[in-house]
Length: 184
Image (cartoon, rainbow, N blue to C red; front, side):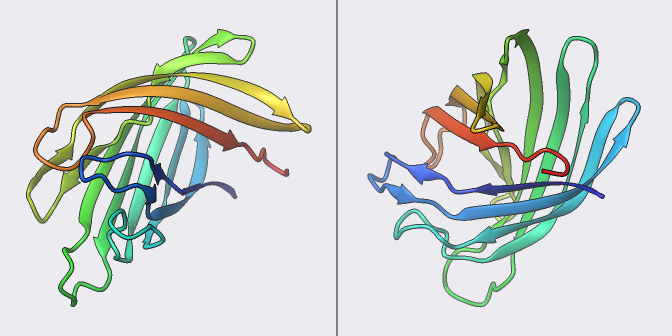
């Protein structure tokens, strides 16, 4: 069975609270099912409290994840959803109960180059009953071979329209993805 797995280890270089450091890790795995129009996946996501003091939620979380992508002639589009719910809500730290939606949009330009939507993630906080992240962004990416292994490098910019919290208003990102093809 095909799987899509991703481990995210964010590093915060600057924040409105002045704190920086390694953020909490998220790990997801989706069982992926190919169809004539694209692919869909279902699985689970976990929040791991690996972040530095002041950056970490200091909570464990777990929940369902699902998504789909379609491949028309011009590129790729889809939607990815993750739901993280606090698995130990009995302490005095704020709970982590949120859902995320990540639109997927990518247009190849040739020679490994592509443009599209950034990794922007809309976040719904179930405890606050509101969106706590409303970004709009774009990315430029390049797919290359490094040591015989496909890797994708991307630069992105996002502007967050949610302005009532500690999320940065503007974010510039640099991402490296190591791609492990089927059977690799």
